[in-house]
Amino acid sequence: MNGELQLTAATRCGPLGGQATITGNTLTVKNIATGAMGCAGDVGEQHLWVMEFLKRPIELTFSQGTLSWKSGTDTLSFESE
Image 1 (cartoon, rainbow, N blue to C red):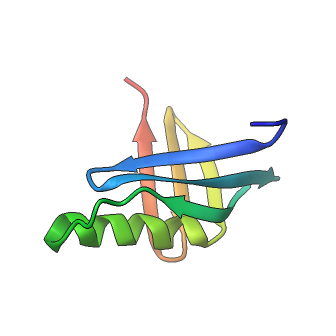
Image 2 (image 1 turned 45 degrees about the vertical axis):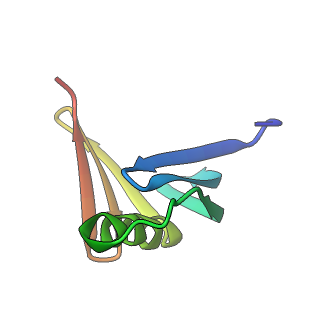
């Protein structure tokens, strides 16, 4: 958007997004906005977890068809089919 990289993630509660930068193999997301709809229980907890995950610098790695995002002690892996 306007020459800036943006990251958007969708949870069952709604979208999260913010300005993103990639330096080397580190993804940083700033000014995270949320479109949450007042979710409760496990769905609300998942939304909060994703927000916290995105607030920390994310180490990006790619190996054997798998993209991994590591933020703190948490890791998300995306596999190609």
